[in-house]
Image 1 (cartoon, rainbow, N blue to C red):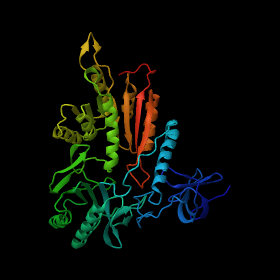
Image 2: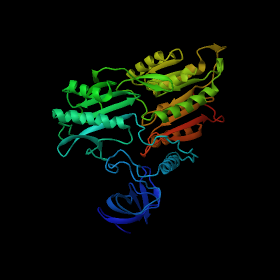
Image 3: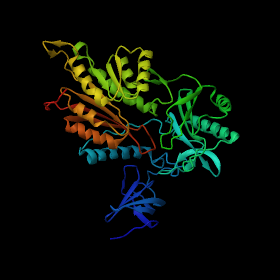
Image 4: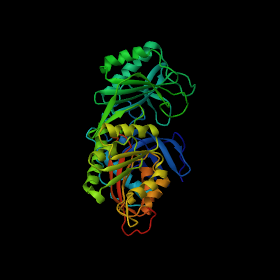
Length: 478
């Protein structure tokens, strides 16, 4: 059996794609992973390391025979900056890879053969992001801004990013000129010294929310920064300083100091949503609205009157934007959120949009709240001869963080009897498929799996799964 060692140069024929969009070649018992190589290409690759399972991880050195799906990347930082994975690949092919990866993960992680829908494309594969988190670093002795090389804390300096609009280029220019004018140094992860850590910015309409993250209690020369930003943005922004002295990978500190106040709002399908520096909002407005519209349209098709009225529980609600969209169409919504500040923002959101009578925001752990809430909804608090007047199960929306759902939440949902239905939104196919397996074991069947291209030109994908309880399932505690 051949033995491969670091720095060996190997000629390979790429026959498939991996989960991250990398090219895969096989030779005997060995599997080679070559980032930025495309299916159908013959390449030269340098071995970086070999693990004990005969998996060989390589670096692409030369493309000998090119695929017709290869395109010239628009960005000269591509392959060096860790931001994009597929900028070298025809967009239609990107969508096929993401669909195939979803299907493969359902088979591998859940043991389920699914006929996933085609990935819903984004009309703007470039310039679609409304938010950026960009670190400061030092390049050739100068303060720079950019992105970390993959699996490192080494900065690749950038002056623009094609996944964002021109607004990011303008902000980077302002901050670099500001840092240079006052000799401000970037934070160094090794020495733990340096002031400037990150710029976190979001553009909503013509307004900006901008946070400067510092390794210090105060951002010096703030008036000069405000003057520079006023000139560049036309005074349409809020500016904050977040102090972050902990030496970890969390971007922002636990609080912010307002340097320049301005109310910033997002419009989510007609819902006016006030944004603060800690607000969660999907970074692709178009794809977010497509997902929300589909869910709202399908739920509202079922909405009846009186005893048949549809009730929805959003178990990981955040500030409740989707719940407000549903409530505006007459649906009763319960939002569960563990972060107190998000629940408070949810209350303000409901009132500002006139849907507070149909929205109940509950602060707490969904694993603890969900069981009693389902019992309350199914019992409807009113009983006729001891029997529930409304035994209709609520529709459950799950949009958890990347780590997926709490196991107790899944156990609770599996315990629901009746015509229970689930909409599961996920940006992490690995935890999605793990959770879907558990729900399937609890008696739910998949109605559809639809991937959405929330993150064009990267390996990431957003997926919406609809499930409903099989009617041949008996038992259950709720």
